[in-house]
Image (tube, rainbow, N blue to C red; front, side, top):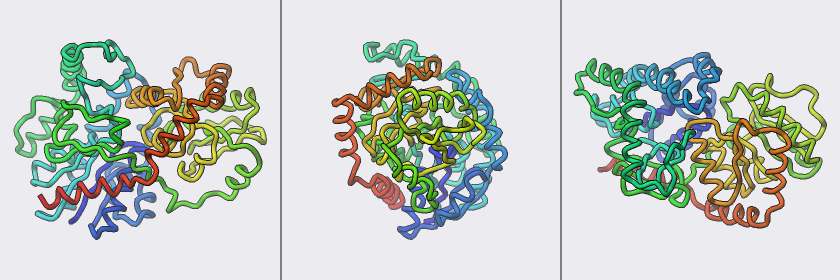
Length: 416
């Protein structure tokens, strides 16, 4: 089969799709990744074909707007500047590459262009859901940046009412008209709900284990959950010699990252340095945007632009981060405690799940200052129950190949 893999988002969103593509390519499929030019080198180094939709500069411009991280405006920004502009580009890329009767689409839930191409060209479509937060349920609702009244005690009918109102006022108002206009251009009938475009009518796969996001009876059908993909760039990138020297110089460090696409992390890293000094521990700061890193770091704190988590977290004491699902899963696999500072999107829901598992804690952006960060980290690092929970969760992940399980489902779809 010719497989067109269509991720949208940051490195944490793109890595799992590249992992799926690499696994399918090893099975003999012809795989092309259709995404932003920002990830061209990553895709090519992974041995896959690449088709650009959107330039690297456009990606950086999108990531550089602080609204993308706002708890209320963040999703609207993604709708307006991510989904809608990408929709025609993604559609055209697929149209130029597909082979009738031989092509399979694998897309993000934000891939409205792929969803339209699925109908236009009668192509099998797999929608990948990286986190449970995007699979709405009135039974066990995900936690939002503004939780309103979505607690576990709220009746299902009231949760569904809230969802219906939010869908109509928030999602449909921003996406439905433009999506239907695009569909009309390609001679497709209008849809009534923009949220229906987030799911494939043929195959939805959640890339997380069922103990992290238990399947719900009101999820879209058909949906399977497999497990955390845990694919990073460890097999294709060179690890700096300085890392090994730093790790060998003393006790395992605490790792700090606000996310691969975060360009407004100066205060985050300033607090990270202050917290490490206050605790008397070593720190490792990760950011591709070095202008965010404080000058004149002490010898006990080191900065790297990028490190594959799978190579460093198992040698670290804890991880402090934004709550993206890729980062969450790598820390779970490494068996270390996490402190999450959620901002928007799926981050509050992931922070809630991590706290429920007993492997970490959360802190608001407003309260993210050195005294409180150091106090919470000390509690996590010295808690026997957290240590045991981390070990138990890591044991549930080890030895299971989620990419293999995911690709087995995809290969089965091809034959149906």
